[in-house]
Length: 199
Ligand code: HEC
Image 1 (spheres, rainbow, N blue to C red):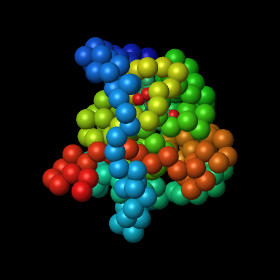
Image 2: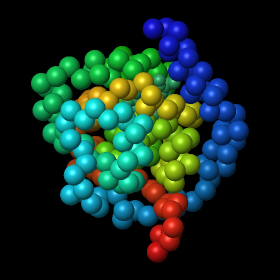
Image 3: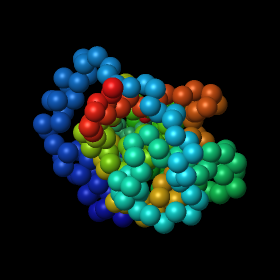
């Protein structure tokens, strides 16, 4: 287990590269860009279902940006029924974020502060792709946490999309009341990279 984690750390901190750090420093000062309106749209798309065995790395390719919706909107209920912290620990999230997600060498996930937004779509993509790839795909950072380091791509370590939705339900359940949608919606800032632009 240790070895795997060391590997992940290397991936997160070294693999993503020094170059990014410098480009991020520049982004820090950049004005927020993007389309605030796009996030809550298209709820009827049919994604996503409980028990979905599609690997997260595949689902992010199949479903258009903004359209990943958790099949567990009642995360509080799910968190009472199941020990979701086990799903959280299985891929090693705890090694950086702390055993209960309350922070370790990386930012706590319990603060109700959302670096890239707090929609289902952005959390699913952030964990799957990591922050560097998320940014490349058109998302803009909203704020920094306590640690200016990239979230590594973890999609490869989470077997199924269902597992990831349960991990996201866990993360929501450890945040203070009123810091999750619909009470507090922090939409992703997406700059459409495809044809046509923002219109
Ligand atoms: C190698 C250490 C590391 C591992 C392992 C790791 N993370 Fe992270 N995570 C980070 C860092 C660093 C950030 C801050 C990234 C940023 O500011 O862009 C972060 C950010 C996040 C955020 C955004 C928090 C916010 O307030 O906006 C979430 C959600 C998250 N991680 C979930 C996970 C999950 C789920 C896993 C396991 C599948 C995981 N992380 C594994 C280092 C890690």
